[in-house]
Image 1: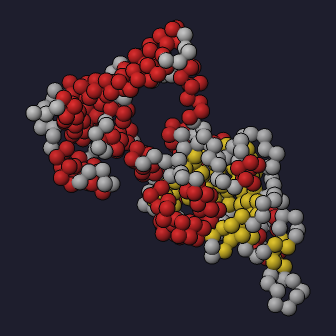
Image 2: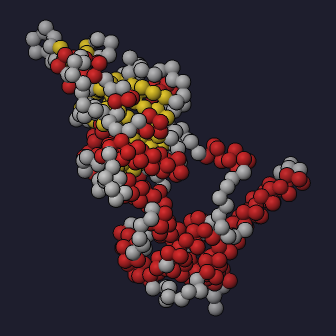
Amino acid sequence: MLEAEDRRYLDAKNTEEYVLSVCLHNDHALAKAMNTLQSLRDFKIGNNSKAFGILQNKYQSGKDIDPTVICDSWIDLGIYTEAEAKSIVGKWQGDTDYEPKINELARIGGKRKAKKDIVKLNEFANTDSDPEEIARKAFEFATSWNVGAVKKYKTAFEVHNEKDNRGEFLHLGVPLLDDYIYRHAGLHKGTVKSSIFRSKHGKTRSSCWEVAQHLRQGRTVMYFTLEGQNNDILGNVKQILKDEWREYGDHFLLVDNAFDIDSIESAFIEAEFTQGVDVVIIDYLQEVQLNIGRWVGDNERITETCRRLTQICTKYDVLMNLLSQVTTTEKGKKGYAHVPEVHDAYGSKQIIKASSMIIVGFRPKNFDELISQPNIPGAKPRVKDPEGRDAPMSSVFIKPALSRKKLEYQHRWLHFIDSSDGLKLHSQNLI
């Protein structure tokens, strides 16, 4: 005879699997479940929360839900074995009386939370808190046990209490950047950072250098490349991390087959629900397509894709780095006059509006007037740095060009060296 705890487990397992199955086959049931359940929290058995997250993602993105495709996705992502996935698919037999099961799952989830909150309340009561404070805390807990539609608003206190959990500063572990360049903007969750480079000036290389630093800090990074392949990006990061990359392989997510904003959004939400994402790289913004059933110009396309990516960034509290291509080089300019300005980004000015910080990059060896040949036999050619001094030929210079926060070091250059070992910070001093 089953123990009470075992019976509760089996009841919860059967209820979760039934709800997953009916949601897989019935859009109305999925909408009801999303509005009734406390997000993914009510799925506690195995990987059921990840499975429901994928369903939720498909529904929110407006895509048709094909049970066969979803089932294959569950299997490919390792959420279920083939037998487990097929078992869940067959749980729903076409009955229309599914709402009681959804409500039952919400009730189970609410009861689980109540048990945890009662323990917390008991601990709180054993402190020096006044009875009024204990009563307020008890009521706060109790109101969250109600099952039904998820509240669409937040009180000022709720926003105040969650503020430290959003907008986290994602330090790179490099004092020059953490303490001076990015301290107040550019590396915070829930914000957009833009990187503007001319073609072949190191936008991907510099981005991969930052990816390596994020991985070293234990973060999950998702990289969308729209002009290369996954192996190109991984190769860049491997050059920097060497064998160390294997420690972070599960936290580096690469996508080279998503070319429109809908595909990018869908892939991101799937990763966010199944693994969690801290940083997103779009390489590069001008290549993202917009499928709305009619012709659109570059300005409208880039404006809309930038707006959608910004919404992802703020809604899911991730750092979004938009790499951006610069318009063609203007004739008549010489030397460092070729350094791009923030308004040189090809297409929309939405990039400027969305970004908490914009950095620009420059590779001087791409311009003959910045290359010098030393008058020493056998000496290698050099390039001029922004101050007119000689610098290694493989130099890449990067600077913050715009920041929403007052930036003392705006327009001061970081000096990197590019080599077969990847990009490396050459100096701990700003130029």
